[in-house]
Amino acid sequence: MELDVFKAAAGRIKGRVRRTPLIDAMALREPAMEGCRLGLKLECLQVTGSFKARGVMNKLALLSDDEIARGMVTASGGNHGLGVAYAGWLAGAPATVYLGRNTPAVKAERLAAWGAAVCFEGAGWDEANHAALAHAERDGLSYIHPFADEAVIAGQGTLALEIIEDAPDTALLIVPIGGGGLIAGVAAAAKAMNPDIRVIGVEPSGAPTLYESLRAGRVVTLDAVHTAANTLAPRRSAEINFALIRDHVDDIVLVDDEEMRQAARWLWREMGVAAELAGAASVAALRQGGIDLPPGARVCAVVSGTGDAGMADP
Image: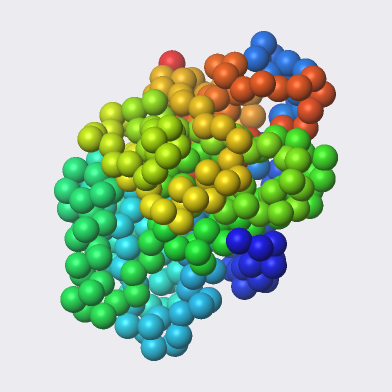
């Protein structure tokens, strides 16, 4: 994917999503992060609470008026569904979101508040996705894939454009991975702007979908997932994401649920930022010391997925 693709996406979504802040973490008291200059890209402050609105709004801009009027359908762990629900609300079009039963009830409530029809199907995203695809085909609706769509990937990559515009000396990007749409877009866009930048992905140890795919040299399907970070837990990615990640991502590290939970608490206590488990994955990877941080390097961790500040309680 060329840089012009991401710049065009940025033009389409301007005014429909927020340009989120990149804040300097400062005063780090974490031994594993000492010596680096850490910035946090706060996509938890994005409209609907995550980066997902970027990709959905870029996709919406490429649909015809007739396609929009007929309606959209998707499957989600919650955050992508909120992006689709927001797009439907903005366009005055019906939106249907299929969720696995592992989706927190608060996400379903927020989807309904945006006006989306909510359907539960199966244990997780993969089963919900089968139902969403069948619904879209049966009723002639536009299916909005959460990660395996070039327009969605291009929209997510606009996040990298903002980071590098705000901090041109960024040497390392740390990005959470679910299905791979965010990191595919961010890595491709970032490397197009600066081939020397490093991009590290972070997955739950209980859902190492892309980690295992890269090890195998092909897209693999996990037998099962075991993580409370349900928005990072598809059992399978897709070829388009795998190829971009293989070509542009330097490494993938794994974090467990407790490390993400502790990172979410740290974000709240030290930064006043409320993030869900998935949203804290990048910070969890930094805190556990699994990433080589050259002294003085400008590092940016993507924080995406708003959470309940109550999770910060011991």
